[in-house]
Image 1 (cartoon, rainbow, N blue to C red):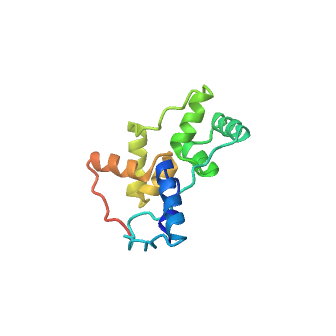
Image 2 (cartoon, rainbow, N blue to C red):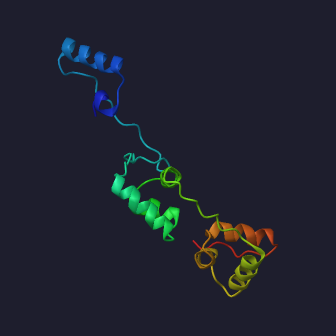
Image 3 (tube, rainbow, N blue to C red):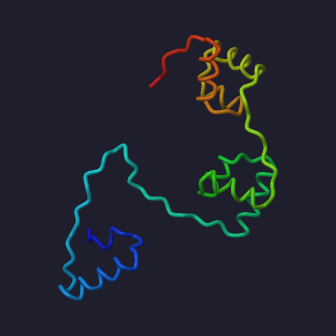
Length: 148
């Protein structure tokens, strides 16, 4: 991989340097080998996705009709903060986050004792599985070991 190709958006001075190096020595810019990557480090770079005005209108309407921000984020291929900003710009009043109320916690305890996983309970109560796990742990319930 050429050094120039590894820099997706070089500054103007750097671009001038590349041009001068190519003119001085032909096309023989040094080759740069990619570093050995750690599997825990993301190697994929996501493209910045701009929504068209029509998509923004669809997104806002979907939210007004009950779609969740995370669902819209996946559907349109954008970050949830992007969805949030589009909703703010459109003047949409956002729904409050679902909390683990005493009623929800009691239902979660019932389901957990029946053998449901925290993820299954979360889907049932419209919260994340980790929210359920934390609430049950705080409530003093003895948690089962995680299943691999």
